Length: 219
Image 1 (cartoon, one colour):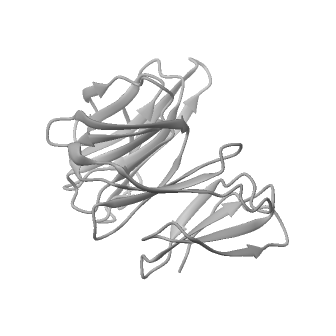
Image 2: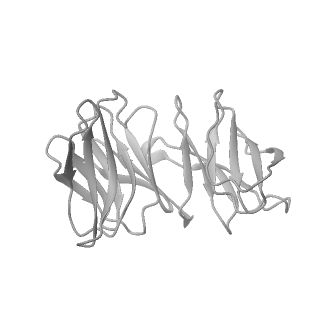
């Protein structure tokens, strides 16, 4: 959903083709139209860029830049690997594209300016007021890390192995607390939450749950 609340973009499956499609919906009239239609196996994530004139969509063809008004593909970043998530930095200057590790994309030029290699499909939470992101590597890798997101100078600042102690298994989702000082990771296999310090990566607490959690939001 666009920050202005005027429109939303979602992905849908065309089972007769079969392809996946992007759909624009006007939230005032609920009229819809297709966007970036093509032979894409899937769309994994969508991010509406600042100004609401373009979107980024992770697909089997790579990261697509799509014009909101026309629905046409403007540019494509080659995939390299399957795209899992797309997050926009606090200043709107860069996108973080999750694949094997993650890449920093300069939005003004739509070029990859930094690569931070790693395991597949990290989940990403972006700090809302600083050049920082926190990522968790799900399932077997069990690693939490923080990185700077300042363009070509992006680098990892800390890494924490959540497999030590053994009671934290298979982290899958994460969220920052409102004060941005703590990150919480949901671990569905071990049925608990891992709580870590954003500045240092120190594991602060492990909170047991009654069931498995695959999604997380912090109020």
